[in-house]
Image (cartoon, rainbow, N blue to C red; front, side):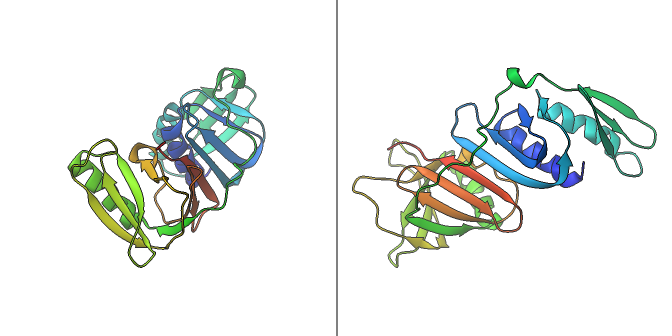
Length: 222
């Protein structure tokens, strides 16, 4: 497996420690709470269905081998992944898929988003820093005076601190009484830039600008 695939595995492991991968080149995961779904198309071809109980264990084993000179080879041997490099070999036991959290096999039918914008890595870093500094969890998506988009880090339950970031984009008309906010803990995105669509149906879609990678993230209920 290529390093890029392992980085996706690592990221998906932050959404759910279980990983069920179907044969082919598409990997998916879903959070236990069903509020985050992710899908990626990878350059590796997985020859069989596999189940991994704890993705972090596999990442740690892969790191053992990546310290050797040369590439890490991964072979599929029935109930095992066999990782080997120049001086090491590990047989990593796969898990019974029926015992794991399997993601849906179809994409979410995303409703048309009233709000669209580009979320750059720089902006996402600023959002996380502001949320950490102010000890806040909710990222509200609000309109600017010119119809563009502002991300506002606030407390969903009280009117205390807030921190605003202008991100451009387009903020359309919403049904009355609808507020758009995402819990920052659900923004488990692989580093990069994303085209974002947000729907008043309380669902958002983050599409990578340079990878075949998509996240669907549920919004907080009003």
